Length: 157
Image (cartoon, rainbow, N blue to C red; front, side, top):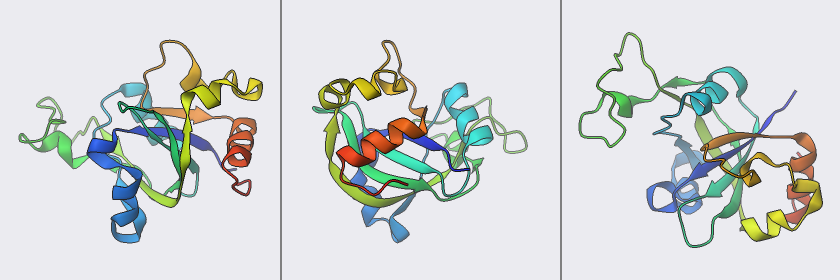
């Protein structure tokens, strides 16, 4: 059974255009340093799961692409790199704390921004719209995926 996810990326770090320009339009989702988000990757994500590629920390946050999980979880190499902003001195190669999955962008979409998402009653309980939610990865219910797909003119996945 396919699961669906919303994954936030700051466009200055990895935009949907950056991902599309990468080989096979696939990027490693580096830098997740929240245990709950890490656990979603480790325990919930499967190759082929649907992903809403979301730009955050920008002028107009919103969903900007449709993607899919393209790998099983594996250790995030940035945790071991002392020059990386994601370095974690307590993480050891034999016992890594942080994982990542590869994400393949299938297509860029128009920016489906927060105000438009909030305007749809069918999306009122979408996790990213909840007050106080700051997780970089959140599950998306199948009914929310269908509504968002229609709003973006995508075939339902």
